[in-house]
Length: 255
Image 1 (tube, rainbow, N blue to C red):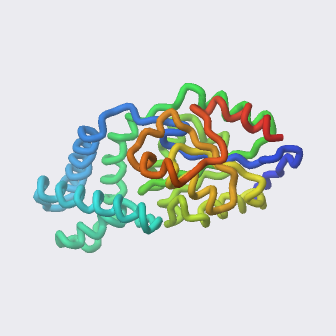
Image 2 (image 1 turned 120 degrees about the vertical axis):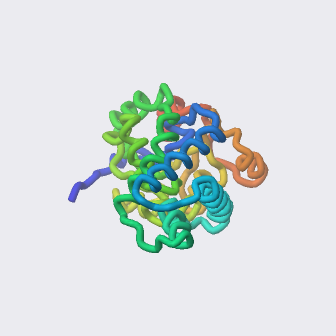
């Protein structure tokens, strides 16, 4: 088993980071991408021999996803896109589709949006700097599909910088549930007081860090989402930076 020793000269030897809108960003218009994603999902299922009314199936699947995306923000539980797809297919008369076909369909769906995620220009250099300074890095992403996140990590060249990569889909729990942060800290045997959490979402990254007793850093470059606006007066980060390149200086000033 790998061990990850901490540099105890650092006030916060563990740095936990969000992925989307923190290290990478979405460069497309979502409505068109969403529609194309659903078409790719449906076409893959049809080629696999499932007899579906394409438009009706796509509409129902999108409706289920929309309902779930709303629900998970209050329950902080992740049932995954795969679970939603299996449930709907059972209602269409396919209670036991092959796992291979399901994975092919989900991969085809997510490949459309994956092409739209680009790495922030500062991310790799900043992560390299943090590692050279002795920080141990972990990634925690809220996402409905673990393999989707793993592909995004690899296509962005991020994997080698992280000791641990956790997703809500993989664990079944979402930020701000403190448990997902505790699982990450177990990687190093670290306490919450030894870690910082860096992310763009007040209601997930910043509230989650506060719930877990972790120092929080809010990245504001791409933090204009409506969900953040509703939390501006109630969820206060411990520190604020515009983009990830400001993080090493912030951490150095705290040592």
